[in-house]
Length: 161
Image 1 (cartoon, rainbow, N blue to C red):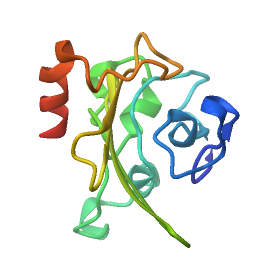
Image 2: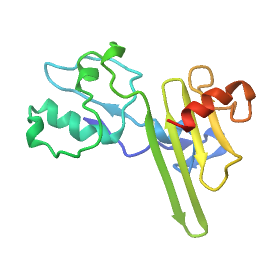
Image 3: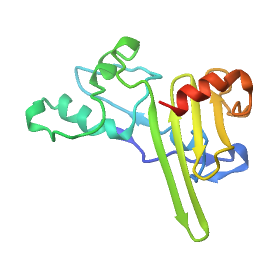
C-alpha cells in the first residue's frame, strides 16, 4: 500500500501547499494497493478515507472481526480492491473531512462532505458562506454553487447528511 496524509495545492486557485483549503487538491491523495492474488491494475472513483485503512488491512490479512477493536471506525474496502468497477460493492457513499487550523492568528474550522457528485464545505462561524461544487462537471472547482438557488435542495440534503 502506498499513500499519503494529504495532497498539495500546486498553484491551483493561486495557492500552494495544503491549507486550510477547501479544494480537492488537498483531499485527493495518492493511494496504490497491491495485494497478491486479489488486486489487478485498475483505477476507481470509489470514495475511500484513511479511516478505512485499518479495517481493510485487517480483513485482507484474515484477522477475524472478533479479534479487531470493537469500536473501530471506517469501512472494509477490500471488495473495492477485488472488483473496482462494481459500484454495488462500494460501501462508502461520502467522506467527511474536518480541517481545524490554529496557527498564530489563523483559526479556521472547515467541515467538508464529499460525495461522488458534490463537495460541500462549511466554514464554522460563517453561516452565510460556504462552498458547493459539482464534482462531475466542475473538476477544477471554479463554479461555487453555494448561492445558486437551483442547488438549494442539494445543499440542504448535504448539510443535513
